[in-house]
Amino acid sequence: MENTERKPIVLSAIQPTSVPTLGNYLGALKNWKMMCEDYDCLYAVADLHALTVHPEPAKLRQQTLEMYATLLAVGLDPEKNIVFIQSRVPAHAELAWILDCYTQFGEASRMTQFKEKSAKHADNVNVGLFAYPVLMAADILLYQANFVPVGADQKQHLEIARDIASRFNALRGETFTLPEPFIGKIGARVMSLQDPTQKMSKSDPNPKASISLLDDPDVILKKFKSAVTDSEAVVRYADGKDGINNLMSIYSCCTGLDYAAIEKEFEGKGYGDFKVKVAEAVIEELRPFRDNYKRLMDDKQYLLDTAAQGAEKASRIANRTLTKAKKKVGLLLG
Ligand code: TYM
Image 1: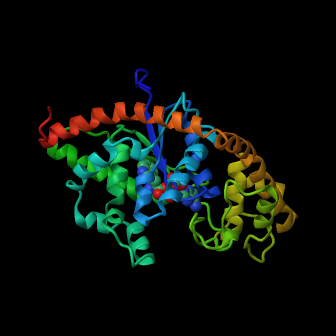
Image 2 (image 1 turned 60 degrees about the horizontal axis):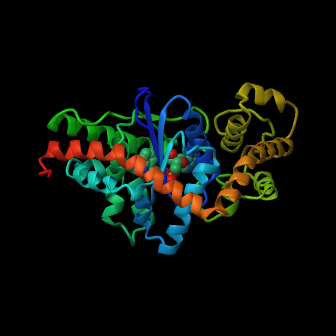
Image 3 (image 1 turned 180 degrees about the vertical axis):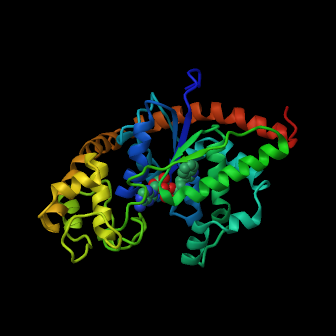
């Protein structure tokens, strides 16, 4: 994928920590797929980022392959997009080191996710966790990405990527494009079904709190039926109705209906009916994914070959930027 047509460039990535949730899907993956037509897109499995939590090695390898299959199964065509595994493109780790030297300790310390994760896992606050946003900046800047489709939780990491790029450009001359976050209006923050004030997360210990993309339809139905709501029994989007607001935004993402249309559809109906409808919409939305995923996971060789091709295409672009950055900082090239 050479940028001959000069379409804007899009890059995003997802960690291979476990099967993605409906939050990952509605907040990120669904937008990734929609952007394929209008942009030149690169999508990565961020396996280097996953090392910060010390996953079991065999498990990480398996989950990386599964996440790669997931990206193809949601509909990212590897002929039209560059779909790759981050660690297979060594330029990411190399540029990250250069950018580490252009990132201030203070700004990295202010990252909310770093503060949250280090409070949660006080026994393993490693330097990788601290430098995590800098590696993320390298992922983005290597491809001169214009837009980065992410959920709302990644916004601050995008801001620091822009700050690092601007500082580098100011000190060493124009090198990197400044990326813009691309955050959908609806679905950018899918909340837990059990505590709708918290984001739906892969790492939630309560299985009823999140929908995995591979949950069976009857499991999805059960989880939605037990979703926490409120006692008003009116389907309307309003402050203080976190549970219903969350279900309405999920339903809106899956059906394309706006909130007014949803309120109308469920006028005079109880939450029971609404929850079943939301579950059905999600089941339908995920059906093609489940079928594709199963087929792809039965053909590991295809996945490995496609990942190798993706890494080769990504490396070609990444190495151009890396060479430019190395020259700018004064590394002696052959
Ligand atoms: P990760 O793997 O945690 O999540 C992948 C994407 O899913 C979005 N997301 C959500 N969106 C809406 N509601 C939710 N409940 C929800 N949970 C997760 C995330 O915002 C993200 O877009 N650091 C990144 C991965 C990364 C990256 C990058 C992203 C590495 N390099 C370069 C963009 C560009 C992460 O951990 O995402």
